[in-house]
Length: 173
Length: 306
Image (cartoon, rainbow over all chains, first blue to last red; front, side):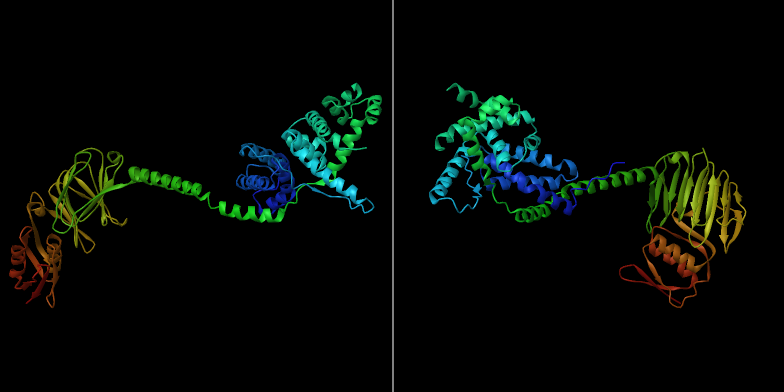
């Protein structure tokens, strides 16, 4: 006898799902469109829809559903404008012994890095950011995107290559 | 730089990420500038963090929208109500069609002739009611009846008339039933059976030209002096009936009420009155009894006096 899954129609279960997945899904969409406000709107709509369809989505499949629905909603949105990843913040390791010049250089480099990431093709960008910023494994990313791990590795390789082409000359050794 | 080209290559990087490089390839790659650059970029990228997201604020926003949206499904629920109402209406209609009854009734002073599906004719006297099943009536010929009426029944299966004071069963005859103050059944043709309501009384069979009258619970049987009921000829006749009964009959045929005052209404009356002229009817019933009467202006109230 299979154990009864918790119903998403119950407010407390719905809240739990919201708290668990809202942030991840929003960032996922943010990496795609580079606009935090738009990302939040899209994901909130997805959650509104989830409430309406609460009886048709099973608790165990809700994560996959959310990412899939958010992705579809994003694709349905208008062609997005130039991607600006201004909401990425550097969690600069407060290393006091670094020289001010070095910190300044790091700041400048971070700006250039963000621009370079923003100019990545969307498919490579979302994979790269999920992997490096969200620290997700390739398997997790593959699950979210509904792709194989091989495809994720390929996209990562391409992303690394493009970033190196753009930033290689900035790096002085 | 062939070495650099070798490493700065999408496929090679993918293999590296997948951990599919051989030890030699890995060693070579690690020593290259490409590797160093990529690691530096990665290090910087890893130090970035995603946007700050206020989950609780978003949750309260979405929850309030959800609660608003909950009003929407009411449209669907109304649909269900409509469907339920339609079902009930159909069931009700079906019930009416299959089990419903058709009712004929006459008011004060009215007479009506009813032709039933089997060709039987029932003539209703004033203030009488007749009802029968609407569907499949001919399979079970039965009518519910109160008041006074003349029945001309086509022969066939049993025909049953249910009255509040007993049932009359016939095959095919002509007879009159009167259930007013008194109860009277007159048989003009064929044979009919009167079945009293209370079970301890025996059934009474009436043959052609006889009538029964229920007086104080006793059945009185006798010959009919006429060939059709008086009311069908446009008058009511009485022989030795109390005046109160006569007044009731008058009130059935004419839209009037009596204010009898101190008059003794138990006096017996013999005679008849017509159904089409109030003045004459009053004159023929009240004058022989020595009763003066006064008709109110709207001709509704008759005040009696000695």
